[in-house]
Length: 104
Image 1 (cartoon, rainbow, N blue to C red):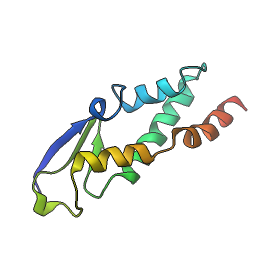
Image 2: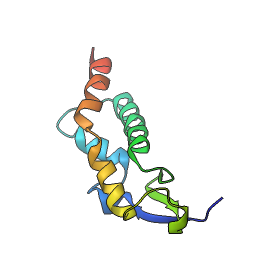
Image 3: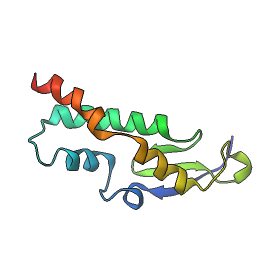
Image 4: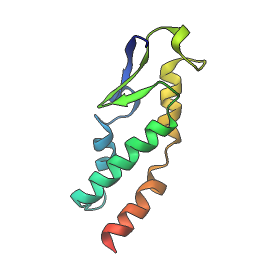
């Protein structure tokens, strides 16, 4: 087991306060249902978790991972890797099928 640390928070990576707020911002020009927002938020967090390097996790609004470099199975600065992972998730492609399911 390794000691963890907080690398950064959501608001330092994205302009919104949380992943849910990012989804709400994405849908801002539409009247999204609560079900759409909930499903999209869950899908977004799952996509982010899959995109993040091994041992970096999004917990609430914090990105946490190993405190010591020797426990990190990746090279590079954690904040740079986190930003790359967040930028790699295509919200439009992810939300479109959710919107279609909810709006028929």
